[in-house]
Length: 341
Image 1: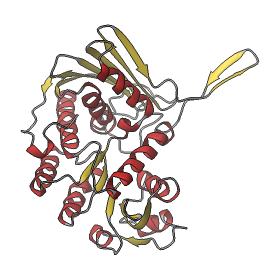
Image 2 (image 1 turned 135 degrees about the vertical axis):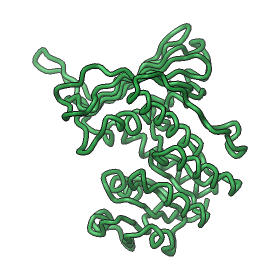
Image 3 (image 1 turned 30 degrees about the vertical axis):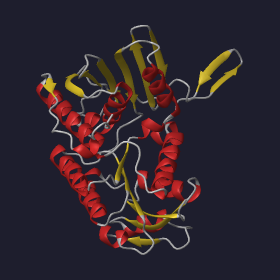
């Protein structure tokens, strides 16, 4: 195995700072060489205590820092396309947080650029594929013991939405995780989407359509429904139940401590995705580091990022129009043949 992997982290916000901490304190075989963020003070704060880590306010400066052998992109989604193409131009393997690129034309440009290289460089941060419960469910579905999957029932709840969160973002930010998880669990592309809108919760900001009920159709006739509620007020909850021809399986209830005292029982509810999926993030980044040090790229790739963007766009169109919207994917390049779920 090669020497310690020098990583440039792009973005020092909530997600980026957590990845910087993870690379420095949790993951084996990697070190943070440099961090880039338009806010130099935020970047300095994120690398405080990390010996030798430099700070940049531009992407190119970070990527060209001596010792950088790989890149972790945790900047806002609209900045991802430029950063990914810059990594490709330098031959740098990259782990890019979702969304890979928010708009499908930009996502397709990334797919085509990587395909022209003739080799994969990008892994996309759909961390649910690394969660223990999701991996167990995937294994169960793959072995076929419960027959063909007929439906997936999904729940995605947040305590409160951040400032500026829009009705469309319930789909293209929150439900994007369910989009990838469904494609991966079922091994099928999503072919159509319908969005139903109950009355908005009193806890939702004015004008925000929250909650929403999203229904996906798959290429082989299964259905996936997602209840997304980003201002539930009581906790961060993610559940998934697979209903198959000969059984069902549900995950997501085990991530809480149950306390029994004086005749009552109470269960803690996580308040943040970084708590609920802490192990998944750790496993995802460790897997990326291990593969990269061996010259490999594993995990969800650019095609998965593109597919998620296309499905999410169809979902937003369905939300705005009230109509069922078909999902239209471009032809898959040969580089991704046999993969992508």
